[in-house]
Image (cartoon, rainbow, N blue to C red; front, side, top):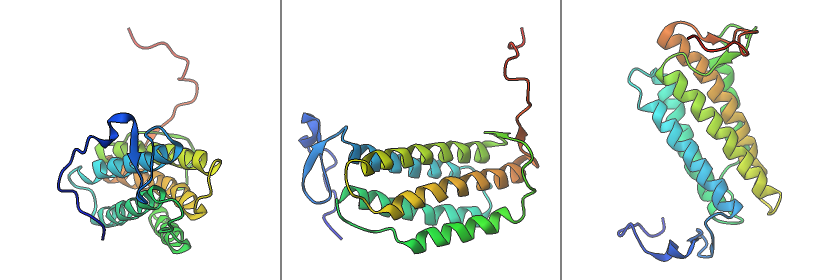
Length: 189
């Protein structure tokens, strides 16, 4: 493992640049920094799910493993040319997604983000994950990156959707169904 941080501030970023894992410095708003920064944000959003009391053990185990994966993905994106995410990561997500989805009824309607604190946090993590995927695609249009990271984020957002459904049932017994025709109604007085 590389150097450990002993001093949190370095003042080297005061000029609007940041250091990559390979030692190069780039602008803080570079697509690469946007990509790994948003992956970090998704990881933090998953931490919010795990901080909700009563999350089932199987979901906790799954999401803790995902947090480690996202840290690996962030490292991959922080070091140009580095590969940490392989096809086996996507296979594991798909198998986990299928296992959680097997107990859910088929969707007949759209659902609203909500259903309880953990379910709502899971929906938020899903949307941050989708944004991370978009940011990594922006980087991929400019530089060569490992395509498995993109596949991982795509499957992860699907998994988070399924987990939000699981958590909504765990917390409140049901999901919040979108009611057609209500979207244009004025708010109550």
